[in-house]
Image 1 (cartoon, rainbow, N blue to C red):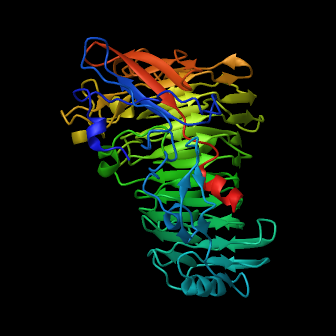
Image 2: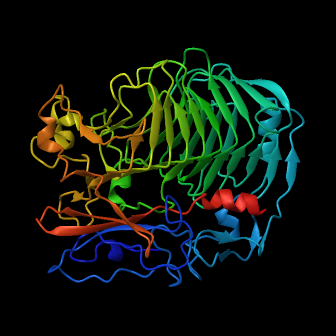
Image 3: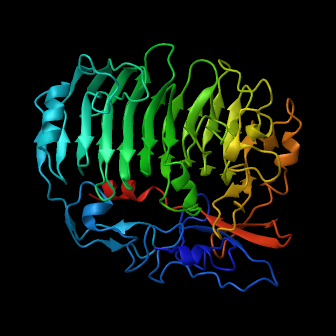
Length: 499
């Protein structure tokens, strides 16, 4: 894996590269990847790292030859317990043919919460807990005051699969009260103990359906259906602390995914676009029958990837530094999605991005959009008088604003790596990022196109499989920027298909 020395190469300029990779299969939204901003001509020389085949896992690769990115059979996926893990020749995922799935299968007698919890308590790492078909009601214990042990079902630092009989068969009716500490299923995770939750339908949620806490770096939540009580907007999945993984092939109704990492620590870690170090939300369906709401949200240093989803009457969203004691969203990659406005909501904005950096590309919106629809960028601390101390914004650049990322060279200023947008359309017409300056013109002083964000300037190099662009750095020099998305489907999805 890369070290801090790599990130600090070139006298503190953030660097990286896709390299030359003849094995790349997908030269669009998938395939291997990397990203970076290179020093301009005349600045210290930097040789872009080669691509797949150099035994070094780089941004966008799952692994590379002998370098398995720190994983073993037992830590790469819950279903595996031992054996020899290998990397696919094209670096696009893991070869698990030499791994063993040696865990037990523990069958809960019913879907009642006490039976399910007893089966979880019995399970050891690598086991599968099967929950049978049925309709059961889960609720918090009498007198529960919001502690983390209030959820009816809890997984505490175990590498297990919690598997229902399918969302049409195992149906959980949640009667857990609304609170930020309540959830229907709660997971206290650990770094090298991957877990998976699959095959459930959870109805009547009023707060959070599934909450993931801790430092897990390889969780999977898939093939679930989550619905709220009528007239409620809920958290389908809430991921907090430093946990990363994938949420895929689920159906969420008026239910968002929210990412809340570990605040300052998240902002101290380097920018890692095109890597596994994010919460991936891919191949899901989001619906909302009423007013415009979010499908994903983040703050506190959130890093998320939203790709290949379909949603109706929802917007892309992330918080900035303006909220309470929280830091802003750190980075996001949003691509290959389909958004629909069916006329039941005023889809006046397609995205509302309040900070951080990343990429937004190849997304398509259609349907009624009364206000035309825009991908809005904003930094609310430019005009809010409640932003004090570190949050105060009285000179450019503001902390955690659009186009700013980790202070890699530790000079006291967050590095400039602009937000890039390209090839997004609404009803067949090009749609771009726009500053929300209609109410607060001061926004134009702090967020500017051609400096903090760029629209439709990115090109694709078929020889390297990289998206490329250039921008002007804080030093006035021209920087080269390269990006290639992380492998898809996510390696955890690939592994499950191979077993």
